[in-house]
Length: 86
Image: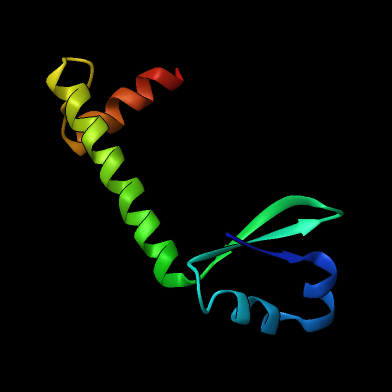
C-alpha cells in the first residue's frame, strides 16, 4: 500500500491522491510519520461495502439458524421495541 504524507497532501492536494491510486486500490496518509488514514476510490469502497453487507447477512442467517435470532414482522418488531422502552 502506498503512503502519502500529510505535507504532500497539503501541497499537491487531490492530485497526490489521484496519482497514488493509479496503481493501487488504497493509499495510506501519514501524519508526522504515523499512518493515520486510508483513502480509496469509490469502486474499491463499494466492493468493500458489499463484502461487509454479505458478512452481516451471513451472520444474521447463522444466528437465526442457531435459534439466537428473532423472526418477526415489522409491526411485531416495533411493538417489542415499545415494550423495551417502558
